[in-house]
Length: 481
Image (tube, rainbow, N blue to C red; front, side, top):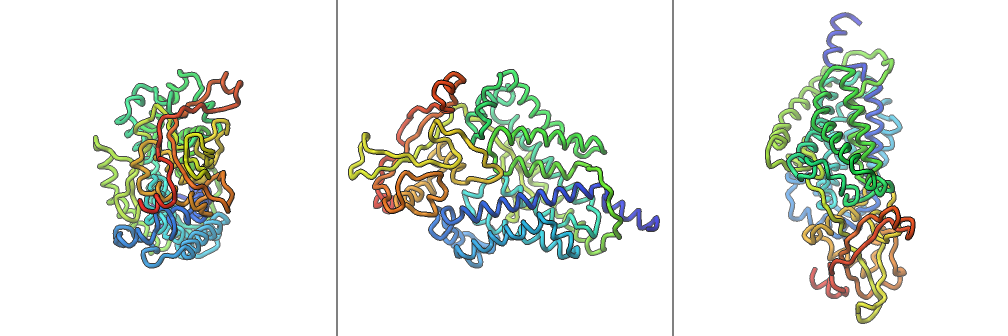
């Protein structure tokens, strides 16, 4: 390779990130696979034709330009399932490295397929897909299209834009905390967070019972990682690698302490793209001119679209987890600007009695992830996303969060709807004998102490607060619908 050619390659690409790109791409493909699997297994009860928030009803009132999606053109449960399982298949192919065996343009098309399919799902997913990690997966997935394969070295501009996403994820989250709940400034939020987070994990009880001085250290370290370390991502190596590695360690700590779907894992994947892993990259020719032009154009577009997220970060009225364009190309992120001090849970029960009374045989529905039976220890589900369980946490915060779907959920339980029951851990009623009435009650949950755990074996203690939904028959729910 001549000196002129080498200079051109060095300007456009960074061969030292060859292995980093490979690890990033395979890990991102795994997260795509999890996301599509989650969609395939849950969509019928959530957004299917008989779902709680049906896609056909949504697209009938939502213009294509505001929510571009394949399902704006056609929807049926069979078509959605085909798209979701196709996404699984393509993601699995990417995990196996199929893109490396294709021409550059074909590898890019292969990466574009899951992005288009998942964008189509998110844009009709409504409340069930309103989480920040949905947009984050789409933003990262879009950049992955232009990261190249074995025919070219990793483009510097795309690597820079991946760090730019990571910067916004971490720095935006740090700003929203400092501007939000005073407990972040007082270093006391973790006195409550592990107990009141949306979906505790199997180790959350132990994290909650760590000494309070250690909680203060955790919060202070979080502030450093989110408000100072992100700037080091744009410094020379090995400082950038050290900064990304610190972020990875912080995210692994969060993985151990809770169930945040793939939020922590995709942040880890982003950080891996900034780590310079030792490798012996192969010699490759210059990137094709058309590829350089495409990458430059995409970089210019994304830099221009970054104006709104930057403006949001600098605003005193900063908002969390918002997309500024219907393609989710550049978004703003953040989490837990406020931390609940008390945990409430909605407990759903049914009875077969003809007349519902307080002393009727009320049987509790068990959810897969959210707290229910005080003696049942939480399980680890992340990066898999239990969408109904997460929304039940919001429902406990305020009935307003559940107004669009909770009544339909009750209706489906009264019908013993098979797809809805698949979202639950256990129904207390046999398939051929649905309940006559369903009710919901609000309880306060708190972690037991070490002594209470030894004496009772229960990790939770719960106290009745109030009625959430009075005993409801199928006819009553149908009329309200």
